[in-house]
Image (tube, rainbow, N blue to C red; front, side):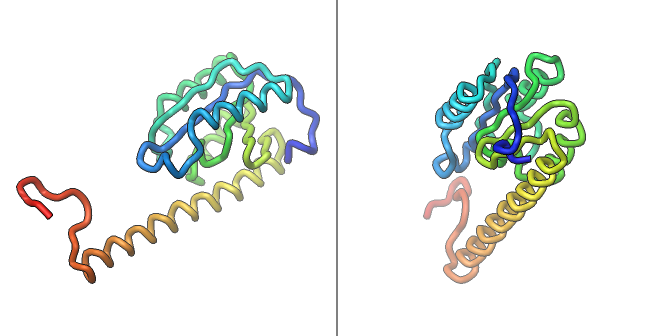
Length: 169
């Protein structure tokens, strides 16, 4: 359900922020994500108990910051996880489904960027649709990069990637 259509009660929130180290310049910074989370909690009167962060790829759920945030939910230290944008949590439909069928069946997931609250069937449906689009976007970008690299190797006859030890350009 969209957040604008529900009455929000004060919650204990754990924030989660992530930036990929390989292309962080194209994403919203960790500081900006944390500022959004703090402002959201202040605006809605939520208690921000912690902000967990990762500076790594989101290609799987094995991340120390995310693990800590989920542990805080399971232990009762927080009631909901708050993210600045859905793709900071995952772009994988499989991983999102695992989280929605697991921890987020009993704990809330709030996304500022997509204005989503998973406490309702409508919110979970909307989140699944958004994650499917994000997954498609990730696959499309990967495909474009592969085509461009093959073109450089085959047509332009240039080396792509690291130069092997002992060789120079």
